Amino acid sequence: KYCPGLGLVHKAFLKNDTFLCACHGQETNHVPVWCMRQAGRYLPEFREFRAGKDFFETCRSPAACCELTLQPLRRFPFDAAIIFSDILVIPQAMGMDVQMVAGKGPTFPEPLKEPEDLLLLQPKVDVNKELGYVFKAITLTRHKLDGKVPLIGFTGAPWTLMAYMIEGGGSTTHSKAKRWLYRHPEASHKLLKMLTDVIVEYLLGQVAAGAQALQVFESHAGCLGPVEFQEFSLPYLRDIARKVKDQLKESGQDVPMIVFAKDGHYGLEDLSQSHYEVVGLDWTIDPRSARERTGGKVSLQGNMDPCALYAPKERISEIVKKMLEGFGTRGYIANLGHGLYPDMDPENVGAFVEAVHTHSRHLNLK
Ligand SMILES: Cc1c2[nH]c(c1CCC(=O)O)Cc1[nH]c(c(CCC(=O)O)c1C)Cc1[nH]c(c(CCC(=O)O)c1C)Cc1[nH]c(c(CCC(=O)O)c1C)C2
Image (tube, rainbow, N blue to C red; front, top):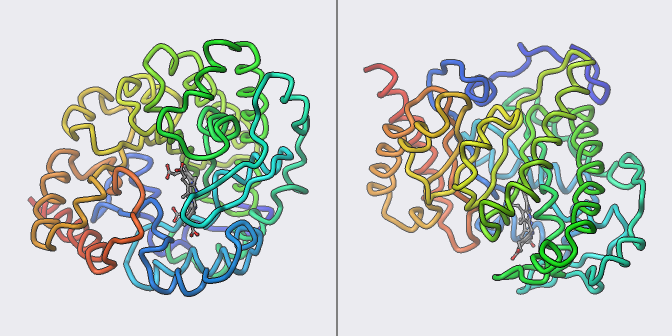
């Protein structure tokens, strides 16, 4: 298979393909595992490397992104790597200023306020020009990984990015962004469509650069109800998967896609029929009912409560065993229900990974 960023790529180069096999519902010796935010502040080496550097400057340095992506893999036998970057590089590429403020998180000094503000956004984004630094980071990381595990690329989903662009940062109610949905539905669809177009090009660029799987983060699904989800999130999630897959098919490529709509349990049936191979789950869904509701149509990923990592190691092991029994070992990728928090103990992350590998091997022998 020829990959523009990498030259000839054979599946045989991949020493551990359990993650990709599980995405496709194929049998594996053990259940693959990775963690959202596995490159993060819970690692002392991450804090040391990031110290004194601007967050988005770090995102713009392919060498820094590569190093931060590899750090967790030096400690733990994760079955996949996820490129270090952020979902907010897309609003930046569309012309918005986004800063990472210590102790506060991402901040937009000039968020979108009214529909007229859409005219301030770049109507057509050249992803190679604006986001080429992400593609370079992916290619460099693929080379450095040397086939150890596959590399996941990612993007924020349209609604989640729209919410940040209007709220100007994190929010508990998302009332400013939801105001647009109820008061300016047409302008909302216009913005969601603009975002979808950039996201499709961005994901295709990531695959061309060497990404072997793609995750779409709809982190703010939970503040929509089922009706608004149907109108303002799901159609765009579907469009993204369909368009990316159609394009990849033309060049004979098959890259599994994961959709993670946090707190969007009301949309589980629909998400399992949205052209994604994998549906990511947060911890509010019971594994057995998730299997029933998705009817074996997709692989599932998740969903241990990240806070369970505060438990003693023996308890983590028991929780993991129950989770594996609930999901079953086929078509399943173990993960947390959301990202790791900065105060988590790396040792317990190691215990989580080991418990997944050990218990799943045992269950497979039964
Ligand atoms: C490590 C990190 C990241 N972003 C931020 C941090 C912490 C800040 C720092 O290191 O200085 C700020 C950073 N970036 C963001 C936030 C959330 C702010 C908020 O809404 O309150 C923060 C603190 C926005 C963001 N950024 C991301 C999401 C989607 C996932 C999720 O729901 O958490 C979201 C919502 C994606 C993201 N962001 C990041 C990754 C790297 C790969 C990995 O998982 O290891 C990924 C996948 C990297």
